[in-house]
Length: 128
Image: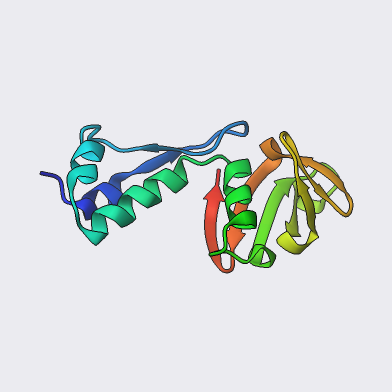
């Protein structure tokens, strides 16, 4: 059996501008093994892998509407053609709406496919 720690350390992501990161776990049967384990570590790993499969829109919706999160602590980095370095950011407190294909800020609409990174506090929770 493969240790849970080893699964975390060898998992990689495949970036794309139009989709969320995809977790590549070397042993495909490992998820079924993990789901059968009744330990706290197995539950944490399963939740971690599920979060990694979320796209940026789903993750933002979860952080906006779930009681465990403070959306004001969210910071969204996105591709901006007019910004120096090509990347701008907006805090969760400046996000007015989460629409189907874009989110609305005080300054306008930003498509989800332009998101490059989402931070919650000091932790990166989404990145391509």
